[in-house]
Length: 279
Image (cartoon, rainbow, N blue to C red; front, side, top):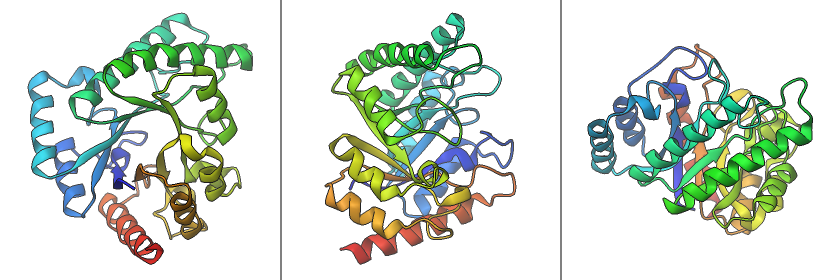
């Protein structure tokens, strides 16, 4: 595996307003806890592309290198006021979303990040499931072709706790298959698997060679080991399939009561211990 990463949502304003820290501060903290990489959420105040000047982009890349921290992945902030729904019945929203994704891809390339996460969208009342699927499919083809030119891989994530279009491992694999591009892979989040009362290790075996990225979270967005998730079995499954991506903690961002540093420290301490046992 490439290493352990930490997602910035719990240090940002998405989807809850507080606590919120500048990206530079988050980079310093994540590095100090011993992480190999950081996964950056593309929302304010961290990485909304329109809010980042060329100079600031260079400064952040310089800081990442100084702290020896890779960028494991970047992901958009779906929902909220602007929507960002690639399967929207509104052509204007779909167009805006695709252009936003391309700017996220461009930013990922500048920060030497290999992966951008595709949140496929949600079905709006009055739109058929098939039409919503086709909108997302066409949008991803557009973005993935753009991403290929920038050396970026797009990964489809099942998000049943948050949306109603790509809900299972098979959904993600089917969309990838229909796309048919080499830089479109899949990923999963243990939180979403647990939400469906499914077994995360099953997702690893099911996705197999197409698995490119993994989000780690216990139920209720707790750090791994703090809830009911069977993470030793998941780590064994990932080893069995020769997974070579990052394990990215996506925890704690569901409530303003979260203590971000506790989530970051607790997650890496647990995961390092379990990985050592696996060796």
